[in-house]
Image 1 (cartoon, helix red, strand yellow):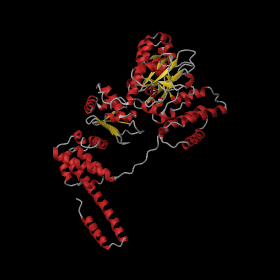
Image 2 (spheres, rainbow, N blue to C red):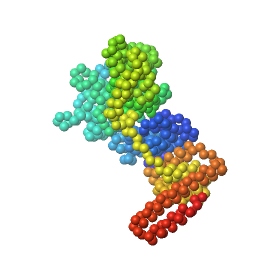
Image 3 (cartoon, helix red, strand yellow):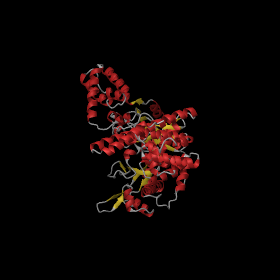
Image 4 (cartoon, rainbow, N blue to C red):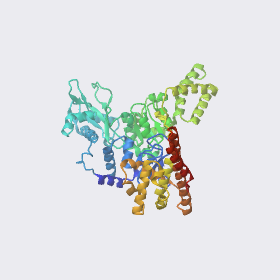
Length: 591
């Protein structure tokens, strides 16, 4: 197994892998980005092409290919291994029980169900109604294949029996969300006689299903979806993101639609950067996922829904997360699917003419009001100030307050007062920071750690200095056990090899030390100190002096405390000895 892990890492360049998920920018020898694991304005996420490691200096997370995928997707190593093996084209040894975990088996089960239903749609006589429906909606055969559309038989247990024949247990079928327990305790198929839309995660793994009813006598809802499972949470899924992500990155914007058919229609019309949300609400999880690919979002909901976009749950989260939100203004009574089937060119034109979300909300809100009437002005102010209060940018806030005052032909001051009142209420009801996240705790700076880390960073960058520095700085001078450990091993390693190779050196440490060492390595690569004898002598000399001074100050403080304790205990012999130690210590030169 270790050889397969190394083979995967050798085949997959870490920079290319991470670029699939977030936007990296060159930063000297490395690449940087805003961290996908916490909210930040200044990029502190670094990737080293040479060492094939990543580290965030903001939240402290870091690691290799596997750690990135594990943390990004919230999955265990086995599933990350499978995802990366697929990307690398490495065939895993599935006889190894560690590879085929329970979770991966359930994902295989979902794939098996999707394949079964896809075949039913293509060949089953019973599915003729569905085939006619899709043809009537203009869905091409290629699109059916691209989205693995299927048909679930109108039977109580045909799907269950098929999956059992494939080797899956009733328990596993239930855990995947494909069966329901009846009143008599017997399981039956969750989806019966329906058009099936497989729902895939960003890696293209089938994690759930949407099912549209096809018969009038079906007593269920128009759409029935998979329940939440250990790998399917609709709040963290965007339909079609697996196919759309490359185009989203290329165009640097994403179009959000409501339904599966809207996505299919857009896909056929050549608009490939489209994903669907569940209903009309954006969740924080979906926003975090979108931010990996773009900061520009267009909303294309039908006109009836768009009219209430001011109350669209999640837009405030999108703003706070720094997303630029626009609206594609669809004709009344039409959704993207309707419009595209009627006039593809008009759809493309409306995409190009998308409006700033706030401008659109102003237009929609004010359109039905008589602004010569005071009560209508008051209503407009209440509705629009509520939306303005959600803006995270002060310049935008000032702009739209000024715009509202102009549109209503009133002074700005009363609007600002009302806005402050609304914001005060909002603040009072929230205990979290931006985007619903708790405010970060301020970390106390430990100067001993700072000095020790700086020394190790410079020695990583200039290993030729290790011999000289080891004669001047004892390991105990660094003060922290993990710093002492790295420093000791670095001296031993260099004395033995007379050279420094990071990959070989890091292999001598336990797994829990890798993140810290990766951080030091990235800092060393990013350091701009010149490889000049005079410069190095000055920089190392000053650092050695500060470390020695810090070590002496620490020992002095301890001695003073011990002398005071001996005095309280009236231990004069101990006091005299400690006082001599103190005098000797402060008289020593630290040069």
